[in-house]
View 1: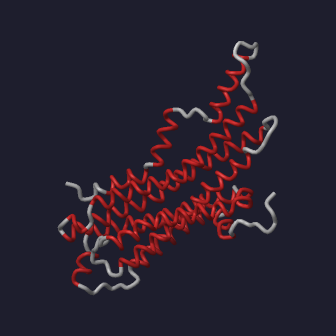
View 2: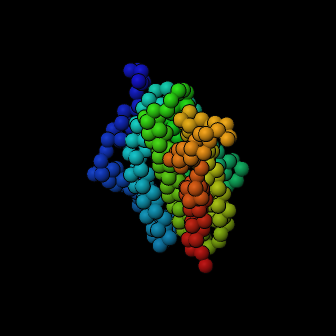
View 3: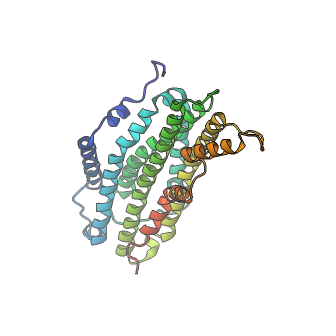
Length: 313
């Protein structure tokens, strides 16, 4: 039981309770908020500002920017349901989750800080873009941080479950499968959140390069490095959680069907049962499952490559 004084943040509980209509409303709100931020100081009066904000590539970027904000908002209830479903782990591992969130936030912020300190960031005539875009990006990464909390809580729940001893109960297997499903779901959602941001950034690059008439306005290496870095961050929070789940699954297998000496009457039967449980718990990932996990981790990088196709000749 979770101690009475420990509670999941109320906003997450409310988000977890949203149905399809509420999620659609939230997505629409995300689109409106993104557009409102971009046009907070409309009308744009400068000659270059008007030319840039009336171009086709700009409107493609604006469409993707607002779309990504809507996607972020629509995915938030799903992440909230995962975190709320791990309520007991939140009660025991709240501090660990906060440390993971803080570390991830710092790592995400580092490239932006470095680009401002070490070199000139991309420039284009969108008024106050140096304020507007970081605000919109911050909204997206706030959603992504809920996913990081999900990773941390799955890791903590696996730690708790690994402390069990004795015979294996059906509830333990069910709990393991639930945690594994939650991990895959969080990984997919995190990949979608970060990929949407990268694709929109690719469209922005296309708009900036098209307007300036030179690639130096927004080097393609910047976008590619962005995708590589975010894929590495996803792997950083996924890998230890996945490893801990595999340890938990291996412990369940060994407790349910411990190895016996080769040549004993139970040897073949025991191996068959261990193999069946390994398949149930997916301890020996199939090539398809391994490929799926790799694709999800590398989704941000793949999105950066897609972003480079905007305007490619």
